[in-house]
Length: 458
Image (cartoon, rainbow, N blue to C red; front, side, top):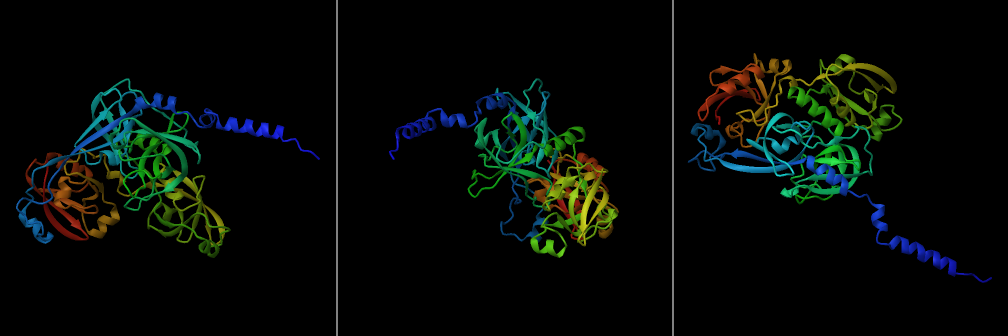
């Protein structure tokens, strides 16, 4: 039987011509030109300056043991200026700017530059180190602004676009896809409140704080971190999701601080062996390894060995899902918790509260003359240290007066000059009244031992 190849050949050639046509490949990919043109005016470049003091007092040998350094006083060498940069965007026409906390952390001066080259001095409205977000304010009106996406609309595989100033190259755009959602990246202190968006968008130093858009031109996240071995992009970048951004910046705008829910448990993931031993059908949930006495979890009846599988209506698939969920709740809110205990499902009612010490954390970035952030002592810490009061150092900004003096996170400050420090309000008042360029005695407790140092405020 004869076979006619002509129709087949013609059909194949027609298909090949269509696939290889100049516009065929372009038609299959999204066009970002209008999205970038519409949203670039709302993106800003942020330049910061901070004083960097010599850590070695003048005349002190560089190999001097730490134990003898305090006897030489706190005479410092000449200050120098250090510059840094990042990105941000206008969330409102009256000058509120969103960026990363690490972009402006420790800055003495913050400049915001718009796409039309106008430049403004920025004030810090509030910062939240736990989510790496900061809210700034510039004296401007009629600014172009971004639109925010719905909090639950992002999907893996979706196209996204970043606009920012990588390596100082203003208003650069890069595109990629969402690689994963809900990534857990604990902070240096082991805190895990942000379910990061992972993308393969080219994010580089200078992009931090800039917006991540979906194809509708809506902000779905704030670019925050990259994973790199070279200092540049290797296709692993992480953004803070819009639901976290909106919750944090709203609280910062209203009160200059962030209150988030706290449960009071130590958790771990459930592997296959644990799932079998705990009577679970499959590895899932957050296994409670320890419950803090007097915490919301303790009061609700949660116990070590319980596995939380649903909290406040959200499935808890991995252990990291629990702090992500609890951290987005307002203190005082009641939540239903579904747990598995000894192979049986149970439901408990839990009222989350503020994390101990959060009530004393203020937005002090760029404002605290010592260069630290402090929190009130919770009753247990105060009682265990046998102290009538004091404030705990939460964070020390690099090259600040406190850092030069040797203050570390975890220190408990009880005295500044001749003034007793009992709580954050007292601390703020005393710091505001201390003289500049004059050594001031500072007394604190570190690991139960009382220590005196001197600190020189700017």
